[in-house]
Image (cartoon, rainbow, N blue to C red):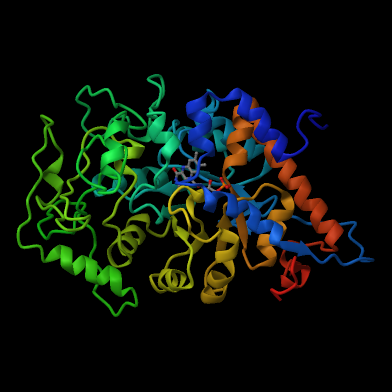
Amino acid sequence: PHDLNCLTIAELEALAYERMDKQTRDYYNEGADAGTTLSENISAYSKYRIRPRVLRDISQIDTTVDVFGHKNSSPFGVAPTAMQKLAHSDGELATARACKSKGIVMGLSSFSTSTLEDVAEASEANPNVLQLYLFEDRAHSTKLIDRAKKAGYKAVLLTVDTPMLGRRNLEIRNQFKLPAHLSIANFVDQGEDEGEDDNDGASGSTASTQTTTTNASSSSSSLSTDNTDSPNNGTTTTTADKPLRSTPRQNPHKRRANTSSKRNSNPNPKPKTKTKTKTKTKTKPKQSVAGYHDGHKRHPPTGPITFHTHAANPTLSWEESIPWLKSRAGPEMQVWVKGVATAEDATLAVHHGVDGIVVSNHGGRQLNGALATLDALPEVVAAVNREVPVHVDGGIRHGSDVFKALALGADFCWVGRPVLWGLAYKGRDGVELCLRLLMDEFRLCMGLAGVTSVKEISKEYLCRVDRDGF
Ligand code: FNR
């Protein structure tokens, strides 16, 4: 049965628009800076046309694919997006139930407004993966990873495109703040809670964002990246959560290597004096990273774990972060990187033994001016050479977009904002509607293109609209 008010994702977007308050709408829909990467993520799909084949028996179409050891009903999943209770009071639980009923894998953001355990329970046997922001205070990440493992998550997707937080001007102007009745559920008991008013979600101090964004430093209440030394940045970490240090190796990523040696050789580390009464520096070296950002000192984020204070982590590196994460995830959970957009990094990812790659630019919310993900996809696919699966997200607004991404070599896609629109429209039913639209469109596209199984979808079914590409 159709919802006659909503037969397309574009209509879903419009219906959701009316149902969200301005802060939520802006937060969900915005891209970084001028939003060109966000819009190009979408328009990139219209550069391609499908070359349909005819007179093939397509009476039996199989849209399923295997992903994370599970049969997914269509080759896309729900991308992890933070704070879903902003859209609907059932938040991530509604999304999980919709995914379960449609047989679609769900990615849960670290910064969800429901706990990962509750989401796992709502998902029953349907598989979930956990998106991870690896915090500078690894103790928090360790706990989260262990909880995900226990709750049966199949993989962690380490978001790697957020060493600093992208500049989102509406978010700043709106002074984005998570409403008091919501919480960043996975961390409610963690971080120092000293009764500050920025107890959840964003810090409220957006004014300081304007002045600190470019420095990515300073005020701990900045909406911008307020990040710290990684536990291994200095050499004094002695906690049980000390990261495993991988043996230094020849690595093509020269720039990162130089940066870290510069940081480590800082002769005058100056810990930042905190204004807070209690800080959680005991597990961190008392060393700032002078010179890392325009000569400004950084200091570890303290206080409640919020998206705006803790998500970005400029200290992540291939050499340290991936081995640490792999060892922590153990054999139970796969380790993926989400946010790779070049052949070089895809090669490094394979070199460091990740289980898969998500080509992503965070839905255009991080580096504006970055290549549309569909345009970045072919070089990544070529570099990976089928050694690990390659997924893609960003700008998928129709089932035929999934078809095009697969034809360009992706194994699987992830869909972000449309799911949030479904959630805002009608909670679980709205997410189911969103998934159903995309699934139906994809199936129809397969049939009309003359394809009966997903693995048949290849470059032969696609051409550039200008016909220059192939
Ligand atoms: C995101 N995304 C995201 N990614 C991530 O790794 N961790 C997160 O917490 C979030 N949160 C988040 C919130 C909102 C409101 C949006 C729109 C996006 C990025 C997300 O996983 C995905 O990469 C993009 O949403 C894909 O682009 P589309 O499908 O939204 O165009």
